[in-house]
Length: 258
Ligand code: CA
Figure 1 (cartoon, rainbow, N blue to C red):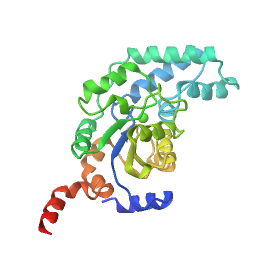
Figure 2 (figure 1 turned 60 degrees about the vertical axis):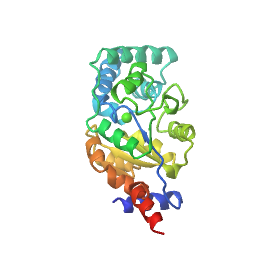
Figure 3 (figure 1 turned 135 degrees about the vertical axis):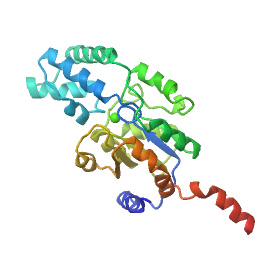
Figure 4 (figure 1 turned 30 degrees about the vertical axis):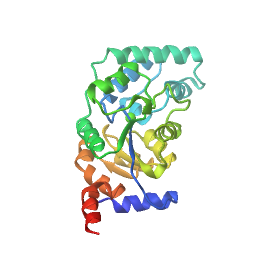
């Protein structure tokens, strides 16, 4: 059980109890092993414009809008913001390279976890900064019957990227839940920041070999080394945040005893 982590979270946010209803999943690096493709596309596209980005830096800045990421590099190498034209040209080059990459595979453990979440009666949702139409369409193909399109939050929905809490606030709004009724699953520091800033219990899965401390410093309430590890521990997570979910059968028996 993860009582200690839950208690620390409730105390930090001034909530009385948790009552899990929905699990909000980030997409890149959580549901799909797509970060190597993103890192490759970023580093090779920006170099054409005299900028430099390592794969690790791509992981660190994952979740930021494309324009925001380009501006960080422009500030560092050019000492100024990128113009709109530059942002568009660089992001176009990045997208073209990304689209030439082989299709990112499902993250090991992701589908098994989604099926558990669904079977337990919780709502699985996607909250992503990505606007890659092909990736979003691939959700239904890869994880059939899991996600409801009207509950998805993508870059088309939001104005600010992560680490702003906006994407998760919008996810909560779409699902009609309050912070203590949801859990976030994120792989990147900025995503973790967005989840905790929305006052949601935020689980980090370290799928990109970042130092664990980077994700803990970002505010992760709980950390697993992989999606498979989270899947293997799901029952414990569920029982911690929704004590009644695991005992529905027993509760029915108990009431008939009264
Ligand atoms: Ca991610």
